[in-house]
Image (cartoon, rainbow, N blue to C red; front, side):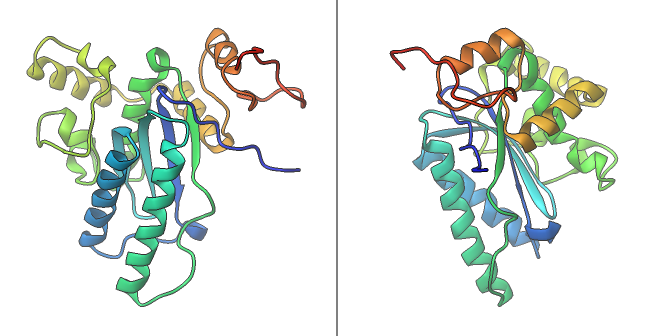
Length: 231
């Protein structure tokens, strides 16, 4: 059975996971983390993809992004993946693949899941037992949102601006949101949707998405989806 193409639609937030092959480490030294961030920054600008949140773990990374074109996200991920593998292999005097196949992604409903997805991303190092608090981890966008540093890679989503009327209020509200943790139901939904590639949102949201693409957006009966005739 052929794999479905990835679900990528411009103007919607997407949660992305890229893993190392066989869960192997994708970073060997501190400079490697920075190299990947630099590549993400360069290619996000080139392909017009807004990166709202990220975390780099030892053997995988997460992104929350909004592409402005249907091919922007795939192009960015392909360019970053190829250039980073070339850099890493040269640096470590190795050859062969680094990634576990193609990246996984899902399109999420903004008002219901965007902030939960950001907290989910920030809390990865805490769940892995690497740090006690999200603020203690260096390789994520969390520090940007709580006012500890300015991160040029990060483009805040408009929903973040609704957390408060001042930078201090937004930073405090976001820190509190992450500290409260992610609802287990949302956490499971985010993980499963990203690994499966199905859209994540309420039924009306998913139904509206289906009108915008011929690719099935939710698990269901096989067959060609019903789409608007002018799409």
